[in-house]
Length: 105
Image (tube, rainbow, N blue to C red; front, side, top):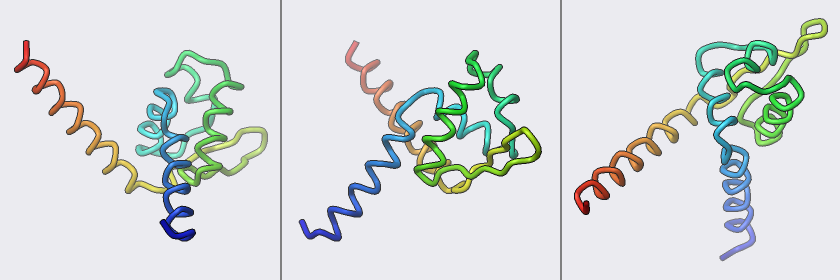
């Protein structure tokens, strides 16, 4: 593997690592609809603002979401809507695996 290929795979792994948490996946889905402030997202995951902010910060560092400040509130938006196609593909894998396991029972 060349150094350039290694960098590409490392970058991909960093993005997947940022997504590898149920709360962060939920946040990405919520942000597909519209820009939201942290305070609007806390109820959906039953977590405090600090916890949700940490999850959003990881997503922002990975380039998945971006943020803007409006007074004391920070609003987040999905930076890469094409990511939703990947999540949809994951659903297909889940369904295929469920069908395969059901056939074995």
